[in-house]
Length: 427
Image 1 (tube, rainbow, N blue to C red):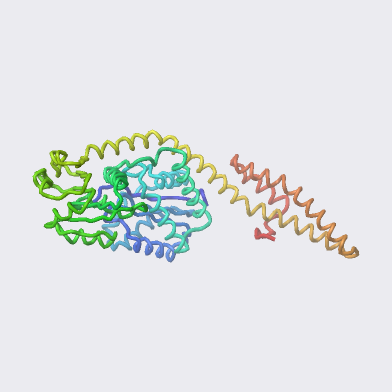
Image 2 (cartoon, rainbow, N blue to C red; image 1 turned 135 degrees about the vertical axis):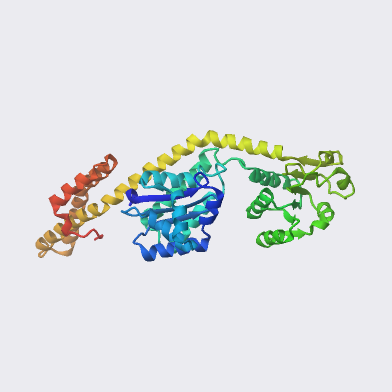
């Protein structure tokens, strides 16, 4: 099946956000597309991956069914024919199996992410794989492929610096918050403003497995704050109660968009701040006045401090890219070898069955007049002979796989032993 693997890919690299948001699939829509594919085609290896930056379909089939899959995606999304024709050209086709597999590896480890080394993408691939398995749309090849992908990702984490540090502003800010919470016995974090970066930080903190802080959020639009609070078990403050919220917090993160600072020295001097309060300003223009550092035991980190952390992490990750690609290529070679050996496996089993049939027939002829002890002894000898006879052809077949010459040897064995008469099922 490995040589039948294909992919279609629409990503931030080849399409604007207006297109990506139209073709993006929710988990329910991805499941519906899996169901339609199972019902309307004979494809049985399918992986559907859809995030804010990509919508991709990986599949195995002798024929090129990429256009059909785009059409089925359009049906799930409710597109008419014109819409489907509009979005179809944005999908890149990877019809070479090796290229399609390499692309999946690179996506899963974060080489293809907008923020290189993205930590979320591996879990997104795992969820897509689970959906395929639940829909009975993952065969032996896809199972082996994905397990190899996940093992490669584990190697990347353990053997390289590719996942060290946070390489995006929101992740770097989250990392800083997690570092600062260690300085407090019962840390209270307040997030002011839920623009793009603020919302990302909130979600990252909410998703963190190591979260030990209590988190509160406040936003001019209260409904947005309440939605996030419900999803991640945060508390909320009315924006009008900002002073009260600040006085109850150890770490205050501001990401509001304003022409002038929201948090000024004058405002904070009238608030009873907690000892060693930390302020993080993610806004441009700045929303926290630099003069607040004149207040006792008050610390301020701005967007440049965060960006420096992100840039340092990005430099480390870029330096590790060759090591990551080496691991991927090594994994691809091992996967290809396994796939090739799987292709000769039926021939090996037929050969074993053919020789076993000969052994059984001869045993039946000559064991009529021997006692049980002698029969057991002969059984042991003939089985041992069988193992020795078949060992060389099996080794030669596996070696031929590595050379890409297995087909010739399979034909020779088929002719010599008339293997087509023997089923490939195990004896």
